[in-house]
Length: 153
Image (cartoon, rainbow, N blue to C red; front, top):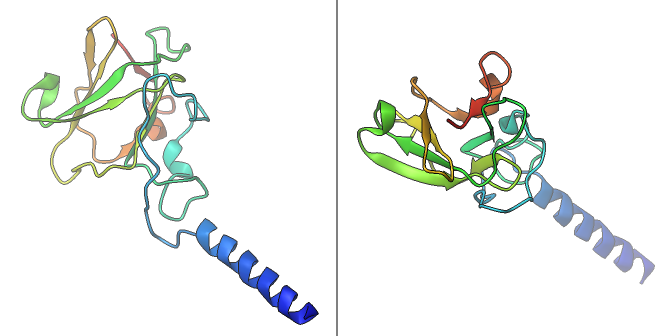
């Protein structure tokens, strides 16, 4: 009987460990939403953990932090807009809410096989456009490191 309990305990532990390992799979994680404060690590490169073999829960297609023009205070409840041409031209691809901490992320598929130009729409209706296209969604890998932070207008 004692060995049976040990075997069951070991199987349970293995099941938990298997769930924790993604092994190259990118399964879900959700999308940021206005007012939510579930995100963390403001200003850090989200993709350093939220990738197929990363420690983060979920895999992001896009992850970053948005700031006010002072470059220090996070801008909450804005929107990230994606277009196929600069300055909000071309085809509208999608909109992603910036959460209550200033982070924006999604595990939903983003068509990086086409040209994508991001823009930040703040609650007042003003928009800031990125002039260069993006090829992946690791926003904070460059912004805040080798280029200025993402800011609203």
